[in-house]
Image (cartoon, rainbow over all chains, first blue to last red; front, side, top):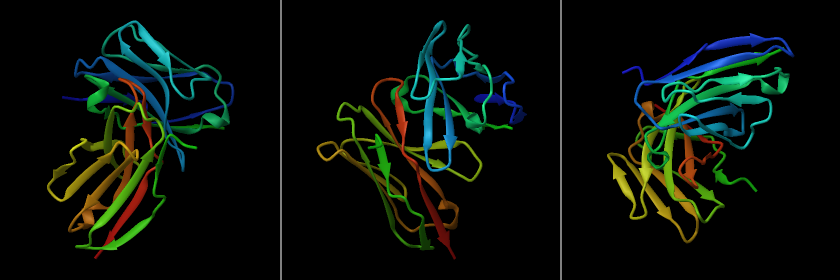
Length: 112
Length: 109
């Protein structure tokens, strides 16, 4: 099984550009989330979804949008990139949140 | 105050040593608890869940004290391959998992 697949692995954006980070899982997991990881801050929740058609905001949602049209896919959209969004982004999924998450390998984003 | 706080580390220990990591959480409604391991420039991977009665997996032992809102991870007979950052994770409801900033461990020959 592929597990959780994130693309791209690396990306450089200019301030003001928009882009979509892709996330797909093949485990039929209901729960999917996006986190960002910054030095000394730990992972912070951006948005999450408990099933197709249902999304909600996490700790740091500003500047990001998500949608969940299928169980498998949970893309994260940066609307207008800012240098403060330079980070490592992880997508994660779980069959039920209480059982812990499986993470994708991450996307390293730099905004210049 | 952060919702999940961990020992800042880093911990530098010799092979064979026993090392313990501590974690405290602020939300008394938290329902489930985990330790994750993260290698440099890699994704976090689930190491073990933490149960109220305490649980052990080989050289790793996890403890939970709900009254004190405290979680611990004990690693016995440390191996070079244990070198990583260990993340304490607390789940308040089904999808609100909060991560500590992590504690870095380096095991030296």
